[in-house]
Image 1 (cartoon, one colour):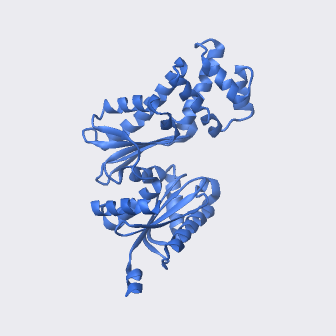
Image 2 (spheres, one colour):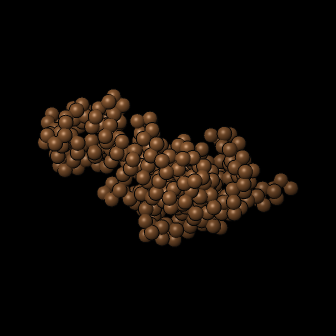
Image 3 (cartoon, one colour):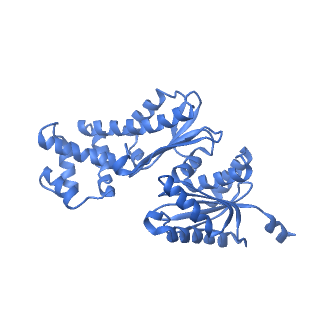
Length: 333
């Protein structure tokens, strides 16, 4: 009887995959999380399609073996993957990833959407992610979802760590010209870049071809100086906070939820700077949506993928399912 029960149990799996790792989380249809597994990167721009498929399959197999379940296919799989940035990526990934054959229904989504569901549990709300890059997403809780931003360092990423670092470098060169006042920011940037003259920033950026990540790594210098009262740094941080608020407000307006009460979840290193970013960000949003509450995410993006899979399977995420997720999450992690 026990074997028959196990064989008839329905499962879903959610994936969260990026440039460094891929996590798989298996859950029962009632929302009970039973196991997780981690493998290598699955951003196909980094590892290719075959590499992405291999990482996703490996993480699933690790989670399946840990759970001790002998199944070849789950009912629904949802993978929130980095690298799904445009309609072309969507077509490529949704035509290839499901071929690994581990689910009756397999959907690949932008990683901001599973982060959104993790943050808001699929209820009405918004998420703003500001790390090296920036992106926002939201749902009205009625099946409508919106994503804004996420266009990369050349075309977007406003308010991100890259944005802050780049603005710092630009302001340092303006100070070198005499176009703006020189502050402690110039000295701190020279020290971080191991240069003696400010104009050597040109050599570092163009000659040594500083990467997006390297420029983004300068952001904490700016945010820390802003906390100390550095005028130029404060201007940069306020500009970044407003850009992030614009992302959120665009999502809110497109979903028409400005009169509702909902969370705006914040994720990423930029927000770790604290009130210097969060206060102007929150104040700007609340001018549009008075009942929006800026807060930390409820769950991570891996759980977000599980919740979307459960929504696909059961048509909605009930309070009972959500409670089962929450209880089992504490046991699993």
